[in-house]
Length: 168
Ligand SMILES: CC(C)(COP(=O)(O)OP(=O)(O)OC[C@H]1O[C@@H](n2cnc3c(N)ncnc32)[C@H](O)[C@@H]1OP(=O)(O)O)[C@@H](O)C(=O)NCCC(=O)NCCS
Image 1 (cartoon, rainbow, N blue to C red):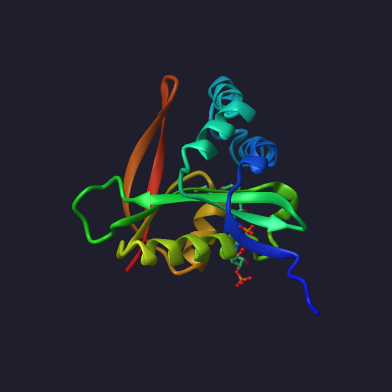
Image 2: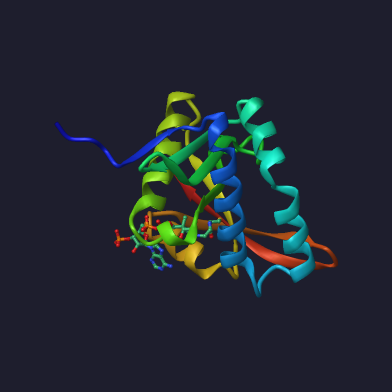
């Protein structure tokens, strides 16, 4: 008998604490030195255990990367915020706890979300990443994403460039 140590599955309420920890560590690691310190602290503080329990109760589309029973990262997705465009699906957030990065798990989460979006009959996929988040941009390029548009995102009184990657 073989047992899968790693699996992509729907999030459960009992994942809330692990997701809050993965979010905090992933955001600190990815955005320190990019997003201004105070804004980053506020965003992390807002996404504590209670926020995650609320999101899970609302049944937000959320898949987790389960490693030995623990949620090591997550992906959220749904209808694209672009409105009418050939890219109907969007990945809103894809984050792994830093100790689980670089092991192929990000790609598993990405493919999991892509499969669910296809099941929802949303064709074409869009993901935004901050332009200064080099590892994320390299990851999406590696997975075949085409950078097609730029925008800005405000954090306090500064605004940062972001890039839209798409898949047909
Ligand atoms: C970005 C992130 C989701 C990628 O997940 P990951 O598990 O580290 O990436 P994977 O191991 O699945 O890599 C998949 C492919 O992308 C490549 N890749 C991943 N990170 C890369 C990087 N920084 N530079 C170049 N290639 C990279 C891998 O080499 C692999 O390609 P290969 O199969 O040819 O070796 C993850 O590192 C993460 O959570 N980062 C912090 C949060 C973040 O920035 N999220 C995105 C916000 S838009």
